[in-house]
Length: 312
Image 1 (tube, one colour):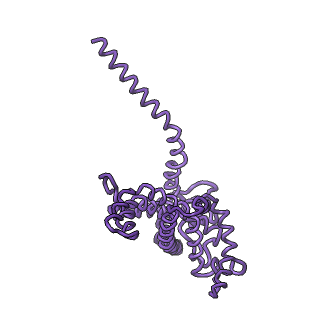
Image 2 (tube, rainbow, N blue to C red; image 1 turned 120 degrees about the horizontal axis):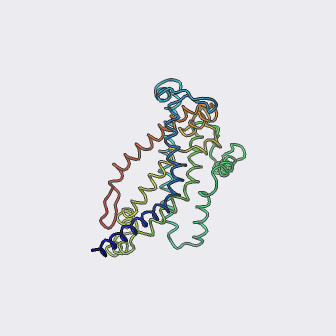
Image 3 (tube, rainbow, N blue to C red; image 1 turned 45 degrees about the vertical axis):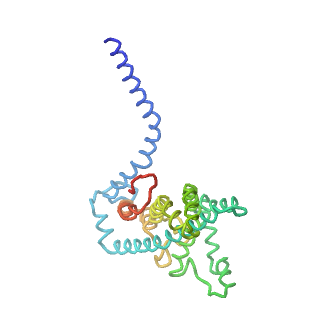
């Protein structure tokens, strides 16, 4: 009886030590997550309830910032215009990036010459800082000395004003961000393609399927989980797009490239209205959260997971 109590006590002590060891390992990560992610999120919501210019005391005004932002001109006009520009940017950028990335990933999975060099070249753009590449592309888009207009001239096409024209400025932002984001999406698609069953593809070919049939009926369904992940990540990143607008156009011309992200920056660090800017951040968070939920409900059901796992 005494031996059973001693064994039971040792087991409990070992279980407690295991719990303490586990929590000890994850505590540094939890502290970093709490300080740099969770606390700022709640603090932004707290600030959105105040009128504050970053200097001096805060004045509690409740939901007035949200009422001004969503319903009261001219703030509401600016916000809904920025929301429309953001949606236009997302609708253009995300499908183009995903389509070209899938094409490049399929191409780079083939045994072509200099494959490693091309893989490196595509990914280098993604790891290069946004500000540095934006400055280079500012020269590329230059209406008088830029490479793009020289290329259009060779094709006997009229030159474009690019960053200073309307609506070419938004298209220029889309071109730049597609170029910058290609590397990340292409690498993910390549990782997804390596997991596609070669046996199923060969079985389809033996049954008479051509290359297009193998892709649409075998490769594409098995690639749907990684496609869904890239779609979610790309959509969230596009709604938060800010740096290219700051460097290339500063929201112009005529606010045609003012996205919600740039409007947030302008209110916080140019007009020094931190409370109002915080309300923009909270509304943007709500929009992204709502769209993500809808995506999981609508698109997530069409994702095919192998080995009998659930579709959501």
